[in-house]
Image 1: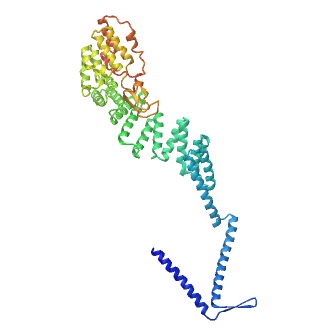
Image 2: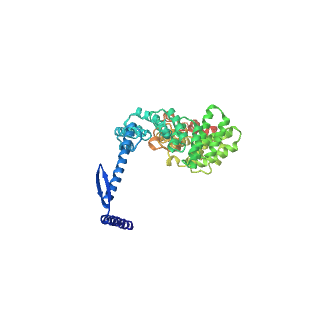
Image 3: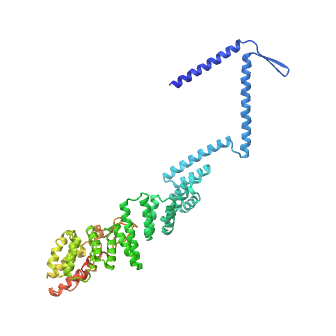
Length: 490
C-alpha cells in the first residue's frame, strides 16, 4: 500500500516537473539558429529541447540497429549470439515439453508413444542422460528387449548413468534366466552403489542360489553396515550362511574346518537345528560329549526335533535301553508336553519292551494329534501288549491317511523338504524353511508304500512271535530308537 502511494506521488511529481519545464521554455526568449544546406532555421527554446530529444533517440536507435546487424552476421557465421540463444531457449522449451510428455506416456503404459516423445526430446535437448532411460524403459514396456539392451549399454558410457545402465542390464538378464551374467552385473552394481537396497537383495539372492556362501556373508555384512537389515535378522542369516559353508565342507571332507564353521553357526543362532546337530557331531568326534550334550539340550529346549534326538543318541551309542531312557529324561525334562517328547519317550520304552510305560508316555497323542508316526507307535504298543490283529490293523490303516506331522516347510510357497536347506528350490527363498506342520492339503499328499506291508502282510494270531515285529515298526533296536524319530518326509 505504501509503495503504491510512493509511486503515485513520484508520477505526479514527474508530470508536474515536465509541465513546469515546458511552460518555462515556452516563456523564455531567444533561441538557436541552425543552417542546413544554406537554409537557416531559427528554433526557440522549446523546439530546441524537442530537437535534442529527437537527436538522442535517433542515435540510440542507430546504435541498436548496428548491433543487430552485427549479431545477424555472427549468427550466420555460427557464433553464439542473443539470436542463437533465443532460438536455443525455444528449442529447449519444446524439448522439455517432449520430455514431460514421454514421462507421462511411460506412466500411462504407452510404450511406443513414450519412445517417440523421448526421441524428440533427445533431438531438441541433446541430453541423452535424460532421455535414454525413458527410451530403455519404454522399449521394455513395448517388448523390444533388444532396443532396451542397446539403450542400457549407452548409459554405461557416462559415469553419471553407469549404475542405471548396469542395473537395467542386470534386471534384463534375470528375466532372461541368465543368472550367471546377472550375478556379475549385480556385483558391479553393488560396487558402484553398495547402499542400494534392491541391489543388495538381488546380489544376496543370486549368491545364495549359486552357493557362494562366503560372498553372501560379505553382502549380508554390508546390509547390516548400511542399516538395511536389523541386527537380529543379520545374526540369524549369518548363522544360516555359516552352516551352509559347513555343509559344503562336509561334502569335501575337511572335517576340522567344518567343525569350526558349524560351531560358529550354532553360536550365532543356537535355535538353528541343523547347526546344532552338525556342531554336536563335531564335539562327539573330538571326544567332548559334555559340550555336545549341553549344545543339544539348549537347542531341544528351543525346538524339539528328531534330528536332535538322533544326535543325542550318538553321544553314547553302546548304552543299554534302560540307560538311554534315563539319559533322555534329562534332555526332555523341560518339554514334557511337547508331542516330539511324547513320541520319543514312547519309542524308547518300546525299544526296552516296556509297552505299558510306552502307552503312558504317548498319552492321548494318537487322538489329539493323530499323525502317521503317533498312530504307528500306537500300533506297535498294541501289538506288544498282545492286542488282536484287528486293533493293530485299525491303527495302521489310520496311519496311511493321517498327516505326517511337522516337516521342513517353506514359509513362502509351502514346499516340503525331507532335509533342511538354506534356499528353497521351488521359490528361491533364503532361510525360509521352518519345522512346522504343513497345510492339510500338502500334509495328506504322501506315499504309504512304507507301511503297506504291515497291513496286507500275513498277521498270524501268535502274540509272542509278533512282539519283536511290533518293535520293528519304530526301530525296535535300543541303539536305533532315536533314529525312528529322525524319519523325515520324502
